[in-house]
Length: 581
Image (tube, rainbow, N blue to C red):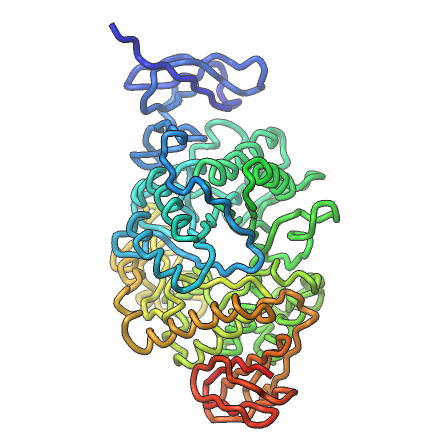
């Protein structure tokens, strides 16, 4: 008689009063307290799909589950990470400085909405010239469709996308194509459905509150284990899935009063893994603090992350192109070209001065030598999807205006990032969509979305229903667009700019102090000085001669009409040129 294969199960469950069982195939097996680790339970049981029961309660998924094949509410399944056959065993990654990123949502990048379907377009991204694909979160969430920011099971992969094996196939294919992969992870909250962590222990605390309720417990009793849980999840993505870097969602919502902030601790552990694997692993923060401490070296008192998103640059550029002035755009709208110039030369627009949107001063100066520590972008999932209609800039701007924006991003001193479809001016929206299986939660999300935009004058029926299948279908990219005008011309322009950035180092120089910007707010033009190059942008509706500050030698690249005119360049309406002086 063949005995069943046994495996060791363990779980941190300090909330259990006296009994923890692992259930496998309908049979329950008791676990014993681990005398060496407070709150931990451990024991052996047959291998298979499993769940934990605390004090005779209902079966719960493993907090560290690597696989939820039946969704976030179902049993967990082990994964043998060593069994996957990687074809790119020689991939050693590449550092973030000097790179161009491409933000991608697996569920709407293709009609199929899977890792395998997305991998079939990696050659398109390689031809575009980007260096990293940044995946929006892939942890399990209820239903099939969602942005991913309401994920649970922080060690697992959303099954409809392809599960653990699908993610590994995607990463392997990306590396085979010469592309790195960055994964967006959410540590500041878990989704409202399928979150069973509170049943196990103090994963959350009322010591702090966030927009999602009680904060993740980073500094209250029990927080050592919670920090280890989050750090372990991050390292698993980098180690087991060979992800090259992580984007950390809204780190300003990580409430932590301990002497060593969680971000510093995480950066330390990632650096150790990078050394052990001989790969340049990195962390990128989304932060609303405008604090250079986020990316300053730990030995200098910083948290040691590699880079952070720069919403200030986005807001300035968006305002300059669209003329919008609502909400946080108000701080930039009075003189938008001056705001663009300020961010290009100082990094942060808000670097200690007054913010009318916040009603207080905000930020502090950014170190001029390290522009690459800021990500620069014209569109992101947030800046598109958080609009009432999820409308991209292509719905309100001309191809010439889009080309001007692209040039300012891709020749900036920052680390540039594109949002999927931006490279061809995609006409498809990217709307807010959910697939909550709980009808009460679905209705609450629907009404909450409508209330949010009613405050800004929107009629309820005009705001897309997040639960309606048509909402996600509208958000899927149309892959026929890149083959026809004007999308093909914009795609060619993006390829040209990325190639120039790679071939002409001055256009990627991260030294903010070396950037000079001339502009005329009334005439709607701007010229960025990048070494011997000038990025000349005419946003006006008529042709104009823009001063170069030196005799022009060659128009290296242009979108629209452009010709050297002595120490200036003559540009057509809504045109842009890169000029060598």
